[in-house]
Length: 319
View (cartoon, one colour):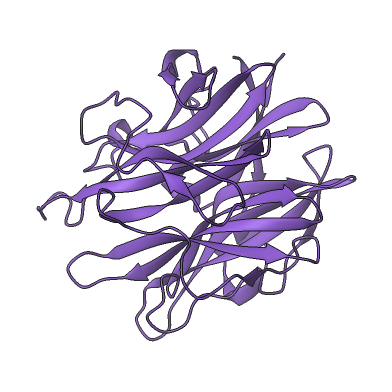
């Protein structure tokens, strides 16, 4: 693979988004329409009562030149959950799937805990107005922690192949003991599930499908998959479990794997065709990738330094 970087596409600090959000445009995810591409992302504002961030979903509409921003959302796309629900304190990320006349949204809901900072689960919502707003299927998640996936289930990415829904997601294996370096380190891996209806999912409990590169505590996040010819290609991001926020050597980078059957994956980061830039918004970190196809060409959206605080960039696959 050889990716041609096109630079930063969107900076949230230059726009007035819904819910008073002015920072972060994390995990860009697309829905491709006839005349434009709608890019959803997770943005933040601070809770006035606690001083902590809440994560909300917003979008921009981009012309098919993938340069010109023609619209940005000003309404609430999907509301956060009520008191005590799985998505009370935020939605990050959201993944969209065109499915016939409807658009499905697989959400990662966050709620705060006492002994650790957060727990996450996967929810489902649907839009009947071309993705301007979404209505939740219910107040609870469709997939959550379980016997062999005890914490932090989230980051769903769903595609439909031969009538079967395939979900790649992450599950937490553990929270690590607090230390002076990292008070709340956690470890999570990539897994796979299938469904006949997109609602009820069959997963192989606790089975990690992408091998570790760094060590057994490597953190893997945001899988995204695209089919090119007769093979499947996955990008994701990975980092060390501790000291990753300010240390570029231990922070997120992009990983790559390929498969012929959607089940068995070969990790091959060295041939991903994309890496950190020598300077600029993606010189210290690359994270939260999203692959998509438009008019026969393939593109990669991703966040850069500071976990996407100042937006996301785009690259095009040279074929």
